[in-house]
Length: 191
Image 1 (tube, rainbow, N blue to C red):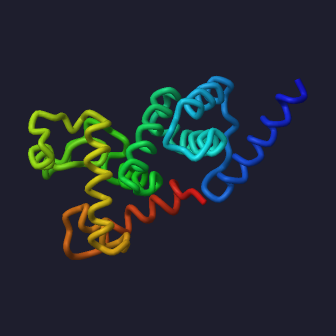
Image 2: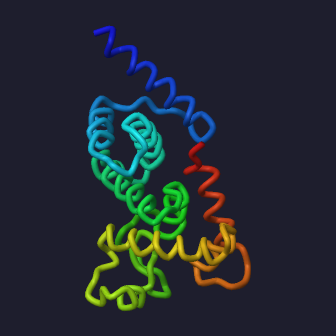
Image 3: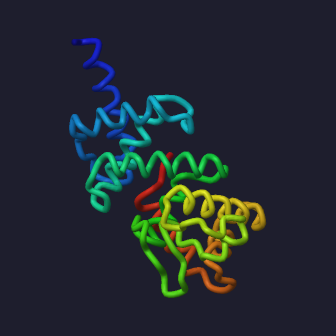
């Protein structure tokens, strides 16, 4: 019993310190801890299980007010992390973009017609050879969104503000990039 308690206490203290700057720590339920452990064990986009557990628990707590169901939160967070890593972009930046673009509503549609979590314009489906694809499908939306974001990061030589403005389709102003960077620093930052 003591051997189990020590890692759990260490995990809780590290998690509390990781979230201290971002938000008040909320003690996770036993159900959430179990789900995080399972997700971390099955996830290949993280460096190791421990990093996966801490990241998933931290981000899950931050996403809880928006997505109350713990399994849905973890499934989405795993997918976001995997697709971001696949495209070689920051998962936290992707979370901030989704927060600003759709507030995690996979069925969101903008006035301009952009769809899904990352608000992808439908013409991207045709251009990507997926003319009959579905931007409300989370994997499709995240794969395209992360790929587009990576392209703009490369084109802007790593200038995140410029890349975000390009992602948004804006060539002037900084309102959009400011909104995303504010969400990143206030809610999704991971150090």
